[in-house]
Amino acid sequence: MNTLVAHERKDFKKASLRKLKNNGEIPAVVYGREINTKSISIKGADLQRVLKAVGRNGIISLNLDGESTNVILRDYQNKAITKEVLHVDFLQVNQHTEIDTKVSVILKGTSIGEKTGGIVKQILHELNITAKANDLPENIEIDITDFEIGRTVKVADLKKNYSNFTINHEDEETIVMVDYEKSTEEEEDISAVEV
Image (cartoon, rainbow, N blue to C red; front, side, top):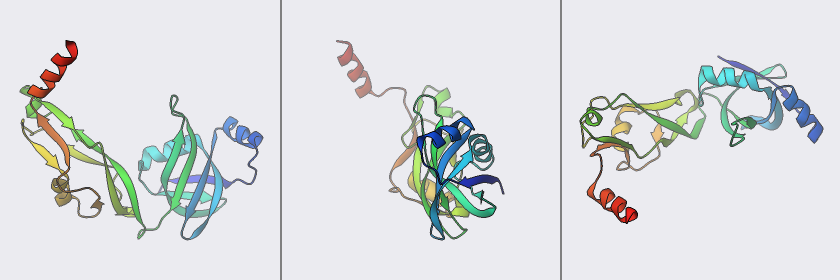
C-alpha cells in the first residue's frame, strides 16, 4: 500500500502556513469514526506521487507521526488558475466503511456512429456512487467502439455490470448517446441566432 507521511500541526499562525508552503507542504485534516479530527501537514510532491499510484479514490496508508491509518482523499481545495492544491481533507476508512463519492465516466474508443457522420453526446461525466472503501473504482469506463448512431447507454445498463457498489442515479438517466450530427431544432436555433 502507498504510504503518505504526515505531521500534526499545532501552530495555525499565518507565518507558519507560509513556512509550510515554502517547504513544499500542504495543510490538511484527517477525520473519521475512530480518530479525533487532526490538523496535519503533508508534502505536496508526496501527495502527487501517491495519488498517481492509487488514483483519486484509492486507499492511502497515512503515517501520522509514526502511527499508520488507512484514509482516502475526501476533498481538496485548489487555486482556480494554477490548480495548486491549498488544503486536503482525508477520511479514515476500513474495508467496511461505506463512502458516498463521485467517479468520472471515461469513454474509450471511437464509435462506428462517429465514423459515419454522427456525434457522441456524453450527458453524465460523473456518477454519484456508494461503495465500501475497497470497492471504490478509480473511474467507470464505457467502450463506445461498436456504438452505431442511435445507441444509448443509461444508468440501468451500467448497474448490470457493477454490482459491487451502488450507483445513486435513476435507471432511465442517459449517460452517453451517439446521435445524428445536428437535429433540425438545433439548425433552426442556429439560423434564428444568425438573423
